Length: 122
Image (tube, rainbow, N blue to C red; front, side):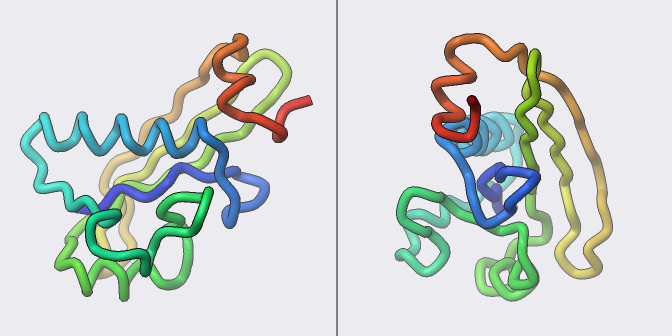
């Protein structure tokens, strides 16, 4: 399994520290739950963009997953709003892009979340 960087719903080529932090936490939790999670940052810089993390919400997901022998990819988005930041996660099977599981939740827009969102929140 691969865990992609959680990205901005309005621009899936961008992420903030919040998205990268969430991705790190999800990867750790999935590994602790017994999933075979591959750490792609250790495999060179092919999939890591400076300051953006592993942006896998793209057409290249199948190719990337195939290169890493990953059967599933955890992908997700965040969407900042006034009182909350909404997070949507999907566990996607790589061979047919079928969503296996999904989870949505809202983070209260507190000082920490605003700081992790950086310049994306006004």
